[in-house]
Length: 162
Image (cartoon, helix red, strand yellow):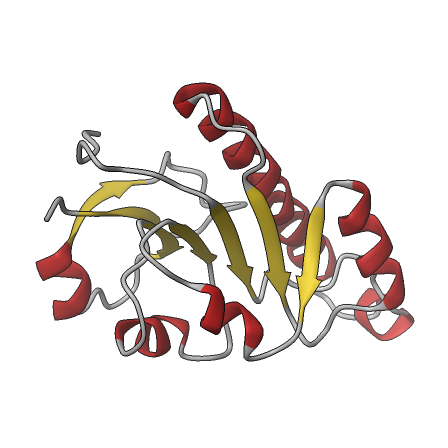
């Protein structure tokens, strides 16, 4: 994967990664194990990407934000322990600029459509379903390592140089 010469990430904004602290209702679902694992992996990905980018770019202080209306007080505390700031809608969308990395795996909101009309982030990690002209014309696509149990059909989109 090649990056444009002016490639820079200052913040990571993740959307709809899911509730970490499962409720009793969640535990009764037949999908509990799968959902719980995917939620954990998605939040872990935020920390892993921050660490890798900080090391690769020599950057310090890449800020991480997560927006999900399902978060509970326990989620807020857990994320805070990992230097991930929770934010409310629409704050995450308003933060996106050309130095933002967006993570949006399987949201129940039209993240791609919203960011296509507001900003062009430096990089997008998202479910690889129905790539659009916006992504195909402005971004290079790299398949995420195959891991169907935890990251189903994910691709990384890197903004093409100007």
